[in-house]
Image 1 (cartoon, rainbow, N blue to C red):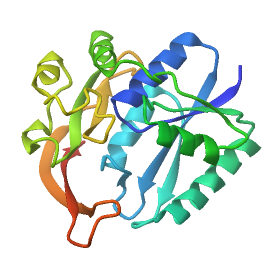
Image 2 (cartoon, rainbow, N blue to C red; image 1 turned 60 degrees about the horizontal axis):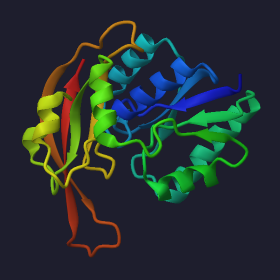
Image 3 (cartoon, helix red, strand yellow; image 1 turned 180 degrees about the horizontal axis):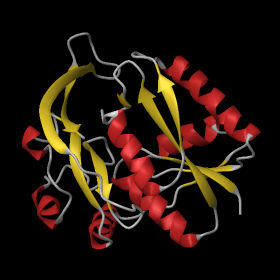
Image 4 (cartoon, rainbow, N blue to C red; image 1 turned 60 degrees about the vertical axis):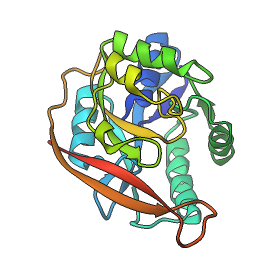
Length: 229
């Protein structure tokens, strides 16, 4: 089977995609790849503490390669750091990789361009996101919302469990899997874990980021929920 590394984001899409690939048994997935903001010691995008990432990795039983990113990495820095990581994977004999992306065409095109020489797999690609949400909970996975776009969701959704009640409560303009950046999750239990990851809710934090191609006054507010091991 092709030697494969899996891009692990710590959230629901990664968990479901990894589950499906492990069930298919046509790829040799023996490594995870996660990016961490080295300054904050947290998973990029989701803001999850590294300690909880490590607990996920231990429960999954798959070794992880953690790529350290500087506090404020621009796209040029990011591309170079990731290119170095991919070169190391190639030297170790990896020919394939996999992602949990569902339907962002530009993101898939970017990944495939940056990973020239590595075959990319997208097991959830073009699946109906409502069906994926229900499949996730039916399989016994458990996850909570830890980050959301404050322009699209109220902060009260932070910490909500992914269940049928949440699916019913999501506004019509929000994708059930948050595929347009509406929210991010932390998956703490499910059929791919040997044991659940224990945590408590910490503080809620609002951070503002410049809008893409916006003026200096244009910002998007993102709410983060700190999970404490």
